[in-house]
Length: 410
Length: 222
Ligand SMILES: Nc1ncnc2c1ncn2[C@@H]1O[C@H](COP(=O)(O)OP(=O)(O)OP(=O)(O)O)[C@@H](O)[C@H]1O
Ligand SMILES: [Mg+2]
Image (tube, rainbow over the protein chains, first blue to last red):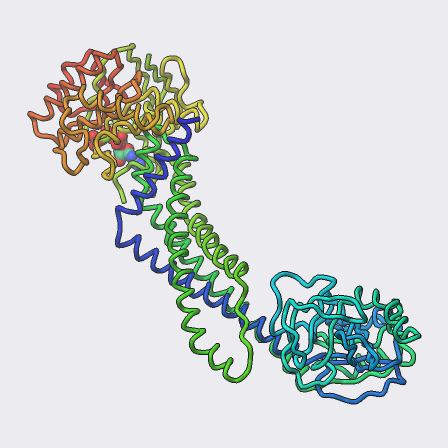
């Protein structure tokens, strides 16, 4: 086994030395790959960040449609962030059963508005909102600060107007919760002073609430909800959706959010999709050029490969050496490029992100793990491209007569 | 030891097929010394390449110690070249980035037969055998043509091959150096009872061989 390892070491050393022999060319190649991967890395990270920020920004605009009971008194707000606090309820499975086409998603909410309530030891009035973090798209985007880790069942999120610190204890109907996060100021009253509880925990409060209020409001029954918030898919209009909802679910009211914002959201989604395609096309064309270059470099080494084969190198060893050499140069270049790309992103941050921040638009960088993922993909991708380019000529040389490889003609 | 039967080599070119070797039978006994002579273009290198496992015959057979060389599959053929055959090429055939001792060690290292250390030790012995005790650490560019050729001979002997092939190994050397290198080649092959097949233009050198093979137009002539 030691012999095997030593052969590998030899091939690795030969590969490194081959790169070292033509330093100018190696460095040019490494620089070209570094540049390409810097642009790809920075581009992908910036675009993913912009996309995520946009999504959050646009989600903050609220839902496209709100479905509540027909009897609900609605006080039309332009931002559909939480459903109206009302005593009337809708069947919890109404939207699911209605099977509306063209919906991108929906989230059910339960709101208990009470003045004899239990928020804090003094039992101050509260809008207690039960929501499902799994389907939610209007509340979580407003999180401005939160504890590390995922939200636990005994966690609550507070509206921006409340000022308990993160991690502190909050009493709701006598039960103890931990303050997990706080929302930014939204300007919508219900949300500003709301207390957000995961739906499971919300329903579990029922006995305590019945004790305090003397009866159980309907939205605390598992099969009833206060209402739904709905997000439209790109190809549908509110008019169609509204009509479908009204015709399939009895006794409801459909409230439409801002049509303009729905349009912008749909348009931006398409634009970003197009940009992604563009970056992909650019990386593919760069990849093809690098592969071509490596083909040429390997073809030039014909005679040396012939010599190695003559003294007993197997085809697999020759191909392996070519692949290692290509992978070293391209992955090395890509790694340098990623570092360079990080510098580019710093510049980007100084400029655009700063301006956006001043305008009050939050810019969310892609998280660390995913950024590392993009970096790794750049390095591995570059190595694969280099190896793909090197493989074919090396493999073809392996099949040629050694005498031909050794021949003097160029 | 070496037995060739009905060897034929055709090359397909733009101007049609070149019949470089047109049916050669050749036997060289174990430890024997054969010199191949003939005019330029007569097919000597083509024959040597077929014998050495470097160029697949269009027809015919090469047997070395009974093994049918061209019936072997690729990995076995590579191992065979590595263990049983040593080559001394006409052109400079050292890897420029390796020191002399590492160039010599290459065949053993490629086979994974010896580790870095052991291979270096054996390579040093081989270099000493060809009289290059002082140049272990030299890179090829730091050696004279004659010294380079000695390094190549040491490399060819690294794995103690049964057959040593040399295609005009001294054609680019001056007369004095040529004589020295040839004497060395003869001496080492005789010491090790290695079968030696040599192509040369130098008839005086050829005359020292036990067996002279004269080739013209791809066939052996008396
Ligand atoms: N790879 C090839 N493709 C086409 N023709 C070739 C090839 N190799 C050799 N030939 C032709 O085959 C013939 C024999 O060539 P070969 O190299 O075997 O001759 P040689 O006797 O070694 O000559 P020299 O003394 O000049 O080395 C020549 O006509 C040559 O042009
Ligand atoms: Mg020749």
